[in-house]
Image 1 (cartoon, rainbow, N blue to C red):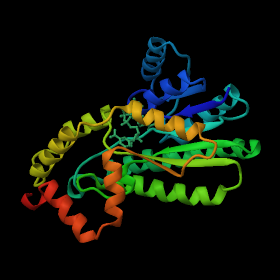
Image 2: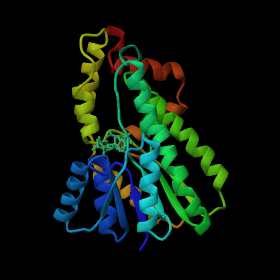
Image 3: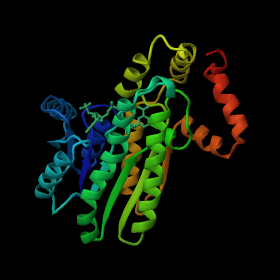
Length: 274
Ligand SMILES: NC(=O)c1ccc[n+]([C@@H]2O[C@H](COP(=O)([O-])OP(=O)(O)OC[C@H]3O[C@@H](n4cnc5c(N)ncnc54)[C@H](OP(=O)(O)O)[C@@H]3O)[C@@H](O)[C@H]2O)c1
């Protein structure tokens, strides 16, 4: 049975992916930061009638990463067949509204945490001459959206680091894919919109952002889970898997003249009135 480690499997996309892949016959090791989170994941698996293992992991803590990977190595055939780097946080807000500590937390979790786990998983995959790494990026890794700059910065950096890694390890038997979802209905999105900074010059823009997401009607996390399954089961996985309307728009924005993209985003988010 092929083993898959999924970081941040206690909610949203990570949990949906753990349940989907377990139902498809993979050996799943889902990570949680707390025992309560691990219990929540185990309960969701029991309810779905699937089996999985849980393990404690905080990707911002190098010791926690090393300990978790040592345990995973014992639970699997010397290391996981695949790693899904899903754990992530968002600190939405305009550049002027986000403090340095919050900015650092986003980069530490979404970029360095992902790099840390990838580095720990790679040696066994290389020895085996086979493996998959799936990075949970975002449309925010394709195009920089206002009011979410640090999150976009982290995802852009993840895209760059992953492109570099893929080119370095091509031919090793280890495949790396980026998943690029648009808005997905998870606690990250709903909590993020609920906790946007208050009493700032960007209030009109934040209200426009809330309306925009509500109007679009975000997709459920199961769509992303099925896409991760594709990246793990395709004989030769794609480099990138875009998901949803916003991902298509993100690709378009990369080709469009920057002035047109600036104007569109400023108009849609009512930044001209902020
Ligand atoms: N929702 C979207 O619209 C969207 C769109 C594109 C990409 N994504 C990406 O999808 C991934 C999952 O996000 P989600 O929307 O499913 O959010 P979510 O429901 O908030 O799940 C985030 C998961 O990451 C875990 N996590 C956070 N910090 C961690 C850390 N330091 N160490 C280990 N685990 C940690 C959380 O654990 P706790 O339960 O302990 O907090 C949780 O399990 C993220 O990488 C996100 O950037 C989301």
